[in-house]
Length: 391
Ligand code: 3PG
Image (cartoon, rainbow, N blue to C red):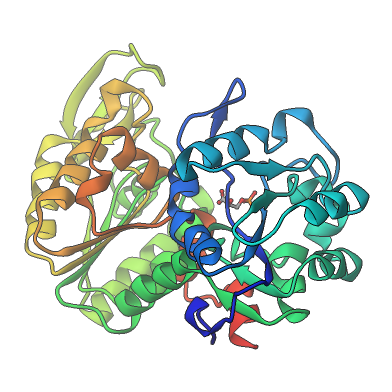
């Protein structure tokens, strides 16, 4: 697999796929982490004499132009961060892009429009990937966050040009591969989030790797029910009860310490200002629902985190969007910030949580991938990574 250092960039046009799928509110970027994460690659390309053509998706426009999902705010923020003009086209390819390309040269940066405005992007249409290839001499993929998608700009174009991974892509793969293949021990995974359904593959895969598997969030209550407790109105996936039992049995066979909440913050309503109380897991009242892990659980989880050499965290411990139920997620974030072990935040909601609590800088690695890091932790080979490896 090639790295950026293997490419001769002088006087070359580089088609660089980045993941600038950033959260926006009323046309404003609310978190520019993903843009900042791509800067080392962009700067390296331009400093080594390339003309940089950047491509990204934003949101899910389904093959048509949607004004709210244009990349103009992204171009503006990127230009501020780089201290350099970024040429932005309103088209993804074609005449307008070619004209813009004829005006740029070494060290210039051009951002084409949201690639998902083209129906060919998600279909990995060879015509579109050829159009991308025709713009450039080289292909660089730095979009780890989109590496689980086999699209024209993430896989198709990689087959048509000399290709390499960008620095962010390399770092993400290196950190996650090292953790899963050659972990420092004790190795602890913390899996939260709302649904068992979304975490089946990752729990299954991690049970082959970790020493401790800690669960929290809405999905924990299906496990607690599977142990024979009553869980009131807490989230339950009836059809996953057997699966939950199998996982606990597998953990037992593998000698993995499977750790579940001991107490919970329960509420009489799913709302910010519901009445709440703290109860033992065996005492959830029948018409209340558990929306966060309780204080004893937080202490127990912090002790395990503190004694671990490697911790991977994916998924919140409760409904952290509401202040009343954010305490468990915050406590876990704080324990990760304090441990001497190596900490990896597996993207998505957990990354948003550490960012919200101002603790992102205290983690060893915060993945820029949501779905991508989850699929990586499931043991899957991501199509965007495979396309580079196949070169
Ligand atoms: C993400 O935000 O996880 C990536 O940018 C991928 O976006 P997608 O789920 O719309 O493909």
